[in-house]
Image 1 (cartoon, rainbow, N blue to C red):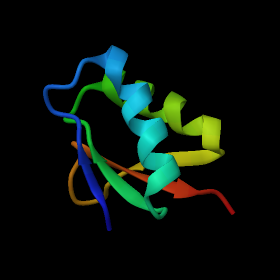
Image 2 (image 1 turned 90 degrees about the vertical axis):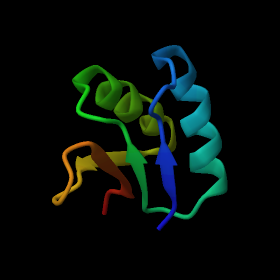
Image 3 (image 1 turned 120 degrees about the horizontal axis):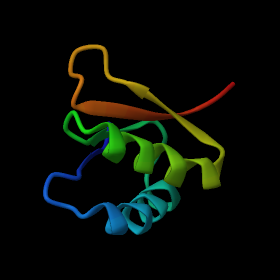
Image 4 (image 1 turned 45 degrees about the vertical axis):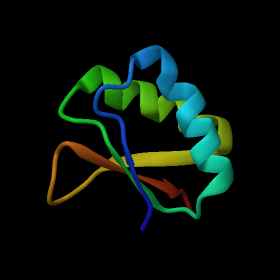
Length: 70
């Protein structure tokens, strides 16, 4: 599964990174956000342009999974 690390990335740059990732990578993929609620919200908003969803990783609360809703 592809892994995208957003540590050190400004919130303003996240949308462009995720739009690129959603168009290039197979779904599902993992995004390292850290525990920041705001960063997770920015990621969730960005992937909705592609009709995708997010969920917290079960084993690591600093990661979220981008997946297709069925």
